[in-house]
Each structure stands twice: as structure tokens, then as C-alpha cells.
Amino acid sequence: MKRSLILAAAAVATIAAVPLAGAIAGKGGHGHHGGPDRFGMIDTDKDGKISKAEATAFGDARFAKADTDGDGMLSRDEMFAEIVNRMIDRRLAMADTDGDGAISRAEAQAVGEKRFARMDANDDGAIEKGEGRRGHRHGHHGRHGDVDKN
Image (cartoon, rainbow, N blue to C red; front, side, top):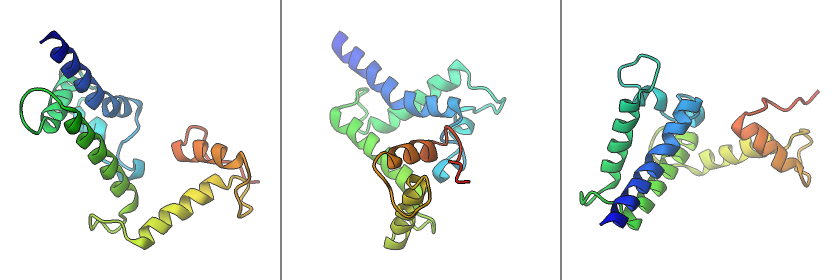
């Protein structure tokens, strides 16, 4: 019983913590890969802050959604499904530009072209060894802004 409670608590933390941390850090807000405004979703009283009660309610709701059989515990299969669904939702938000719920070949190619351009830090039409990692890290997450190409 104690082990089940510990596993359930760990599962809640895992499912809720990543989106909550992203919302607090300002990531995943409206416009980040076209995703929803997570901060606004969690800040239910719209006071510009996420209270402990709001964070707890968010975590509880995510847990309940993932607990598809309603037994109060998340099985490996339920956790896997939640994680995969979240990844798919992010991919769709990023690539499905026409909003039809699917990624066409043209949409996939557009994502690939943007990624290549971002990784090609010196804009020479090729990615040299080492260049792709720097270009991807800085461009994708925007931590250091755009690479200066002048």
C-alpha cells in the first residue's frame, strides 16, 4: 500500500511538474510552437500568479485525465499514453499550420526546412560538424537569441 502511494505521488509529480515548470518559466505560452497559454490555464483566477492551490488543482486534473481506468493510480500504460499524447499534441501545434489535425508532407517539409535553416548558423546552405548542435540549441530554445549572421 505504501509503495502504491509513493508511486502514485511520483506519477502526479511527473505528469504535472513539467508543464507547470514550463508555464512558470514562461515556456509553452501562447505562441511557443503554437501551443496553449499554460500559465493562463493554470492561473484560473487570472491574478498573474499561480498559487499552490491552482498548481495542485492543475496537477490533480492532469492525473485524473491520465488515470483512464479511474483506479486512483497511474499504470505504466497510462503514463506512457499521457506522455505520447502530450508529445503528439506539441508536434501538431508546431507543424499543423492549417489546423486540420494532421501533418501533411508539405507541413513536415516546412518544419524540416526551418530546422535546417536554424542549424545552419553561418547561413552557407550546409551544416558543418559542430555547427548543427550550436544552431539547434540556440535557435530552438531561443536562450541566446538569433545567431548574428553579419
